[in-house]
Amino acid sequence: MATAFFYREVTQFTADDLNQLSQLLVDVVGEGASIGFLPHLSYVEARAYWSDVLGKHVKMWVAERDGVIVGTIQLHLATKPNSLHRAEIAKLMVHPTAGRQGIGRALLLMTEARARVENRSLLILDTREGDHSNQLYLSMGYQEAGRIPQYVTSADGGLDATVIYYKILS
Image (cartoon, rainbow, N blue to C red; front, side, top):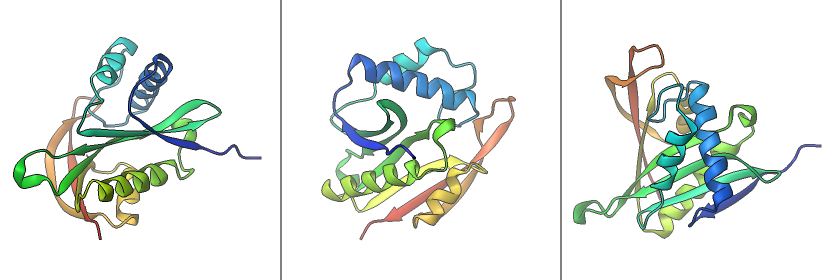
Protein backbone atom coordinates (compact mmCIF):
# COMPACT_ATOMS: atom_id res chain seq x y z
CA MET A 1 0.00 0.00 0.00
CA ALA A 2 1.34 3.43 -0.97
CA THR A 3 2.13 5.86 1.81
CA ALA A 4 0.27 9.17 1.69
CA PHE A 5 2.07 12.47 1.54
CA PHE A 6 1.47 15.20 4.10
CA TYR A 7 1.81 18.84 3.06
CA ARG A 8 2.36 21.82 5.34
CA GLU A 9 3.30 25.45 5.16
CA VAL A 10 6.56 26.28 6.91
CA THR A 11 6.58 29.59 8.77
CA GLN A 12 9.49 28.78 11.06
CA PHE A 13 12.18 26.12 10.76
CA THR A 14 12.74 23.49 13.40
CA ALA A 15 16.22 22.00 13.69
CA ASP A 16 14.83 18.85 12.05
CA ASP A 17 13.37 20.90 9.17
CA LEU A 18 16.77 22.51 8.55
CA ASN A 19 18.52 19.15 8.61
CA GLN A 20 16.05 17.50 6.25
CA LEU A 21 15.82 20.43 3.84
CA SER A 22 19.61 20.66 3.71
CA GLN A 23 19.86 16.97 2.84
CA LEU A 24 17.07 17.31 0.26
CA LEU A 25 18.92 20.18 -1.42
CA VAL A 26 22.19 18.23 -1.47
CA ASP A 27 20.39 15.19 -2.94
CA VAL A 28 18.49 16.99 -5.71
CA VAL A 29 21.52 19.04 -6.74
CA GLY A 30 23.58 15.85 -6.73
CA GLU A 31 21.08 14.37 -9.19
CA GLY A 32 21.55 17.32 -11.54
CA ALA A 33 18.71 19.68 -10.61
CA SER A 34 19.33 23.25 -11.72
CA ILE A 35 18.13 25.26 -8.74
CA GLY A 36 20.96 27.71 -8.24
CA PHE A 37 23.63 25.30 -7.04
CA LEU A 38 26.18 22.98 -8.67
CA PRO A 39 26.94 19.33 -7.87
CA HIS A 40 29.16 18.60 -4.90
CA LEU A 41 27.14 21.07 -2.84
CA SER A 42 28.13 20.54 0.77
CA TYR A 43 25.67 20.03 3.58
CA VAL A 44 27.11 23.11 5.30
CA GLU A 45 26.45 25.25 2.19
CA ALA A 46 22.94 23.85 1.90
CA ARG A 47 22.18 24.59 5.53
CA ALA A 48 23.48 28.15 5.15
CA TYR A 49 21.09 28.63 2.23
CA TRP A 50 18.06 27.41 4.18
CA SER A 51 18.96 29.47 7.23
CA ASP A 52 18.33 32.64 5.21
CA VAL A 53 15.19 31.65 3.26
CA LEU A 54 12.17 32.46 5.36
CA GLY A 55 10.94 36.01 5.62
CA LYS A 56 7.86 38.18 5.48
CA HIS A 57 7.69 38.00 1.68
CA VAL A 58 8.68 34.36 1.21
CA LYS A 59 6.10 31.62 1.74
CA MET A 60 7.17 27.99 1.76
CA TRP A 61 5.64 24.51 1.82
CA VAL A 62 7.01 21.03 2.25
CA ALA A 63 5.78 17.57 1.35
CA GLU A 64 6.49 14.78 3.83
CA ARG A 65 6.25 11.02 3.68
CA ASP A 66 6.58 9.11 6.93
CA GLY A 67 7.93 12.24 8.63
CA VAL A 68 10.64 12.81 6.00
CA ILE A 69 10.62 15.93 3.81
CA VAL A 70 10.58 14.80 0.17
CA GLY A 71 9.62 18.03 -1.57
CA THR A 72 9.40 21.78 -1.18
CA ILE A 73 8.42 24.98 -2.97
CA GLN A 74 8.63 28.71 -2.31
CA LEU A 75 6.48 31.69 -3.25
CA HIS A 76 8.36 35.00 -3.35
CA LEU A 77 5.97 37.93 -3.12
CA ALA A 78 7.06 40.97 -5.13
CA THR A 79 7.36 44.05 -2.92
CA LYS A 80 7.83 47.03 -5.24
CA PRO A 81 4.79 49.34 -5.45
CA ASN A 82 4.26 48.57 -9.15
CA SER A 83 4.55 44.80 -8.73
CA LEU A 84 2.29 43.95 -5.81
CA HIS A 85 0.11 41.89 -8.15
CA ARG A 86 2.80 39.32 -8.85
CA ALA A 87 4.92 36.64 -7.23
CA GLU A 88 7.66 34.23 -8.26
CA ILE A 89 7.62 30.46 -7.87
CA ALA A 90 11.03 29.30 -6.65
CA LYS A 91 12.92 26.20 -5.60
CA LEU A 92 10.34 23.58 -6.50
CA MET A 93 12.18 20.37 -5.71
CA VAL A 94 11.19 16.77 -5.18
CA HIS A 95 13.57 14.12 -3.90
CA PRO A 96 14.72 11.79 -6.71
CA THR A 97 13.18 8.78 -4.94
CA ALA A 98 9.79 10.51 -4.70
CA GLY A 99 9.45 11.83 -8.25
CA ARG A 100 6.50 11.25 -10.57
CA GLN A 101 4.03 10.83 -7.70
CA GLY A 102 2.21 14.17 -7.96
CA ILE A 103 4.22 15.96 -5.28
CA GLY A 104 5.37 18.80 -7.52
CA ARG A 105 1.85 19.31 -8.85
CA ALA A 106 0.36 19.36 -5.34
CA LEU A 107 2.97 21.82 -4.09
CA LEU A 108 2.40 24.06 -7.08
CA LEU A 109 -1.38 24.02 -6.52
CA MET A 110 -0.90 25.05 -2.88
CA THR A 111 1.39 27.85 -3.92
CA GLU A 112 -1.11 29.11 -6.50
CA ALA A 113 -3.89 29.04 -3.89
CA ARG A 114 -1.78 31.10 -1.49
CA ALA A 115 -0.89 33.55 -4.26
CA ARG A 116 -4.62 34.17 -4.73
CA VAL A 117 -5.04 34.76 -0.98
CA GLU A 118 -2.19 37.27 -1.20
CA ASN A 119 -4.03 39.00 -4.11
CA ARG A 120 -1.35 38.01 -6.61
CA SER A 121 -2.72 37.59 -10.12
CA LEU A 122 0.52 36.90 -12.00
CA LEU A 123 3.01 34.14 -11.26
CA ILE A 124 6.40 33.89 -12.92
CA LEU A 125 9.16 31.30 -12.80
CA ASP A 126 12.12 30.02 -14.75
CA THR A 127 13.55 26.57 -15.20
CA ARG A 128 16.37 25.05 -17.20
CA GLU A 129 15.50 24.12 -20.75
CA GLY A 130 14.98 20.37 -21.07
CA ASP A 131 14.26 19.64 -17.40
CA HIS A 132 11.20 17.51 -16.53
CA SER A 133 9.67 20.48 -14.75
CA ASN A 134 8.96 22.14 -18.10
CA GLN A 135 6.26 19.57 -18.81
CA LEU A 136 4.74 20.06 -15.35
CA TYR A 137 4.47 23.81 -15.79
CA LEU A 138 2.98 23.52 -19.27
CA SER A 139 0.46 20.92 -18.08
CA MET A 140 -0.65 23.31 -15.33
CA GLY A 141 -1.37 26.21 -17.64
CA TYR A 142 1.88 28.14 -17.46
CA GLN A 143 2.75 29.94 -20.68
CA GLU A 144 6.24 30.21 -22.07
CA ALA A 145 7.32 33.85 -22.19
CA GLY A 146 10.71 33.19 -23.72
CA ARG A 147 14.13 31.64 -23.41
CA ILE A 148 17.46 33.05 -22.39
CA PRO A 149 20.48 31.22 -23.82
CA GLN A 150 23.57 30.52 -21.72
CA TYR A 151 21.71 31.43 -18.52
CA VAL A 152 22.94 28.79 -16.05
CA THR A 153 26.14 26.85 -15.63
CA SER A 154 25.60 23.10 -15.89
CA ALA A 155 27.34 20.35 -13.95
CA ASP A 156 29.80 19.82 -16.82
CA GLY A 157 30.70 23.51 -16.97
CA GLY A 158 28.64 24.27 -20.07
CA LEU A 159 26.01 26.96 -20.25
CA ASP A 160 22.32 26.02 -20.52
CA ALA A 161 19.30 28.06 -21.51
CA THR A 162 16.46 28.85 -19.14
CA VAL A 163 12.78 29.00 -20.01
CA ILE A 164 10.68 31.75 -18.45
CA TYR A 165 7.04 30.96 -17.72
CA TYR A 166 4.08 32.95 -16.45
CA LYS A 167 0.55 32.20 -15.38
CA ILE A 168 -2.29 34.64 -14.95
CA LEU A 169 -4.46 33.48 -12.07
CA SER A 170 -8.20 33.82 -12.45
